[in-house]
Image (cartoon, rainbow, N blue to C red):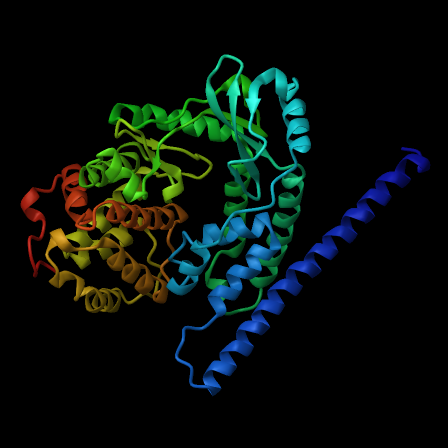
Length: 448
């Protein structure tokens, strides 16, 4: 390469390095500012003897929101890792709103033209100018195809792939540096976590992969009576996803469901069984069960949308989770501990008897409640808290599954306050484990 050809490449590399340094400075500055504000607030509260909860979780959430798409997604992923994040931080991060200013329609038109090779007006007979949702990675518009079908069109934000790639590189370097000195962080595989997070967020950038996830779930859920939208493949690329449009009431809009005459207790049970089937029968599931992703159609049929976050469960993880959940629901703490040991998440040096005793003490109050009135979420939260203190190393698949189970139980309870997931769980998982129905605890007491 001649000198006059090398010069522009060298200038471009220098520009990239300067931009990366500026981004690192921005990240460090934002995190430092929020950390100092959190410490200052803590000191004021101590001096004033203010008993309110510390503001550290809120400041972390706000810092991640300020830093943009990569860090918003990082916070959302951390909120699914109760094995890594204490409950207050988990709760704060779960409220991170993935919202952003809308991309101008002119830019959306250009993205569609570049991706589909045709102007937007040739693909759609109408296209809503105002987006249904605008998030940090993409935004969604309602539209009508030329053949008259109602669809939603998800369009990736211009430049987001490059900015996320740069942030992932920075996070990887930060993880390597943080892993060097001895201390608590050495016990967490930070580099491995960042690499796994990178795979997760890159998958969300690929709308073809999301389309395939939707199709895979259609095969599982349509036989269960769930409406999963069809993918319009001739109008879908890695940056544009076109799906059949779903019409209905949000699953947590209780007033609308009652007006439609929906049997909410039956819907809660069906919703739980749908998730148990995805996880334990197929090992592939929708991993973002918040209310905005589920609708109830006028006919009463459950419908599911947004397939950017899915989970795949290896058979060993699936079996371990089944054992843990069944054991917790039937008051058999030692069986839960044995399942963890079989999975290999108990590192050398852990005092297993102490772990079991602490878990028994924390869960004792829950086990005084009859199975039909019991909530699984508090048990799982206690279980993960004890596991964190004993430095158990959970596979990410298991942590995400635990979080998904907790969210599902909460959503089902909104539909039916009397809903008891442990009853459904014991019947479904117990049959897969070959357990007799009478193994379930009917009232207080049980076997430890």
